[in-house]
Amino acid sequence: MNVFDYLFDSTQNLEKDFVLGPKEKISFKKLHEDSLKVASYLKLNVGRDQNIVLISPNSVFFITAYLGILKSGNVCVPLNFSIEQENLDFIVKATDCKSVFMARSIQSKQQLDNSVQLIDEAVLDEIIGHQEVVLFDLDFDKNSLAEIIFTSGSTGAPKGVMISHQNIIANTHSIIEYLSLSSKDIVGVVLPFFYCYGLSLLHTHLRVGGSIVLNNSFIFLGSVINDLKKYKCTGFAGVPSHYQILLKKSQNFKNTDFPDLRYVTQAGGKLHNVFIDEFVESFPKIEFFVMYGQTEATARLSYLPPNLISVKKGSIGKGIPGVYLKIVNKNGDPVNFGEEGELMAKGENIMLGYYKEFEETKKTIIDGWLYTGDIAVADKDGYLYLMARKKEIIKVGGKRVSPKEIEEVILSIPEVVDCTITGIEDDILGEAIKATIVLNSQMDHEKMKEKVLMRCSEKLSMYKIPQQIEFENNLSVNAAGKKIKK
Image (cartoon, rainbow, N blue to C red; front, side, top):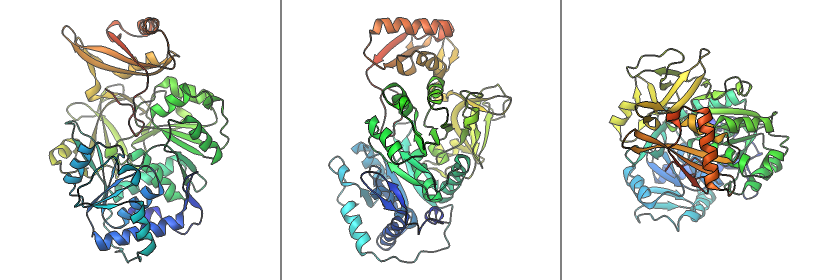
């Protein structure tokens, strides 16, 4: 089955609005019709199995183009709308892309070769206005490539994660099940659709007949809070920085009543316990889902049910429906509970591989198991706890140090909005510990440094106390809202 048909299986004729918001609206029925016309155009003019780049902020333009590309049997390559020209050129060339959907707002910043066909909002409107819908083959291979999502590779060059139609179908089905999503759900969307977490919101709500509220201006906290109330959102999804900013930077958030908000989800990195506790204490009736995933797993791998948020504090939970997780040692053998090892995952949501990187794929997927690169430990009940990324472990005088443990301690100081722990070269210890801290207001840095060191000395072993402390004015995040580690 083509994922397009799966997503619209019971919603294609709905007159209700799928996209809500002050700027744009579109019903399920019109979205289905418009994206079918785009798919028809691409089938006739591009063919199939071609890589088609899509660059746009969240919008009806993005959604229509995305769904049209998937239905046409071509491969969508959604890119960060703030992508550097060098990376854009690299990806267009690497994917042999001949057609690019690009929003007009992006075109002054990005240049395309004249040989590449550019489709913007005006051209899309022409297609929708004049294209007749053609017939599509019902016999469609669900394991064929649907999209390539590029992430930062270890070499610095972008690395393409190949996701199949079945990958999306499997992950969407699982997420709908554990979040209990239905046609009554309305989610506030601040996550960009070029990011797998953002795309999962599009997929799940399209499938169940729910609605999405697009907000591309998270920096304006008031507009996000107003949207959640005005459009009666039942759900909100964010990465750690979103919750840190809402809780520490907004004067109104914790004092606002959200009568319709049933649940919130958090993924895209670890949100430290101090922030989760603060949210749950402020909003005891709103379910808080801690989730874990990777682009290589389409989006989601595990979740912690809200009723266990205090019992299993710090846990990423267990595998979502249809996903199997295990922890292995360096020899690939399963470890006992309480022992650290690398987390592995298996399921129908695991990627096909890395685009044109056969050797990297062979190292990452072995016998159907995805090696996540995350160090984890399981408790006696099978609940998982992430310790660190393999490459983030700091070795101080031969002792292994997880940055997360130190960050948790420093973040317990009320004035601290964010803390990043990194290792720096040290002639004696091999690596020393550096803390980069963001405060919630202008404060005396020397006094705060003393306070940080005092808290660390109370809670941590001597070798885990930062040797360097640096203060920054703002939280550094990328276009997906995820923290940038310098």
